[in-house]
Image 1 (cartoon, helix red, strand yellow):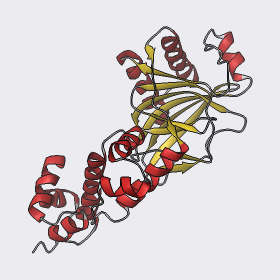
Image 2 (spheres, helix red, strand yellow; image 1 turned 60 degrees about the horizontal axis):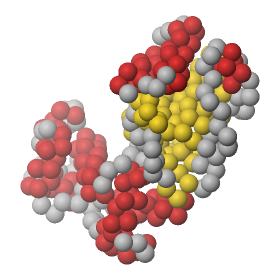
Image 3 (spheres, one colour; image 1 turned 120 degrees about the horizontal axis):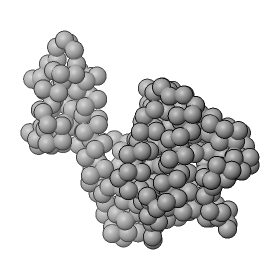
Length: 289
């Protein structure tokens, strides 16, 4: 399934009741129309970016690189990816799939409650093997038995301790999530404006330190780092796809001083804004005065 220039999801049936998915997602959210009827996500290997996992107890956990989740989570109408990037491998099973895996010696321990979710931290070998499987899923360049072998390898390594249980996972409540998703909208609607953490914290009735903690739990980076990323994304877009000059782009990205903008852009991208435009805008000429 192509996602309109925003990534790709490939799903492969390996046995009756067992499906694997490999994805490269480059957008904030996608509608849930990719999971086969009757199937539930069972194991998710996060390789890059972040993904929101919703729990039945109205809490959320956010996957980050090298994390694996195993267990039960709700299947939302919309999947949310903070930061607009998510690379993963995921195993889905239906009522018959667990028996199929058990017959192969690949069943995972039973979870006593439907609301339980186990998180693990992959070691380097398991992470690399998951990366390899994802690469081949997206390329669709193996036969069925090869895909089966690679999945069996991942589950075997997970059972053998190639991923350590993650203690004290940070869960986010629905109220905390609402605060940060609304704050993120306020921060990014108009990047020419700079909204302070103190102002946002006061608006939502929390302390600045609490606001920062909630934000990092969801987005994995500080507010300042996140905003730098967003401003540089807009700058690259405007340099490539608009006729705005560098001064105008600096203002649109929240920099009153074009010199400071150019310095920040070079530090992030390794080249100046003008050089980036020359390399990425074809032969069209722009007025840089």
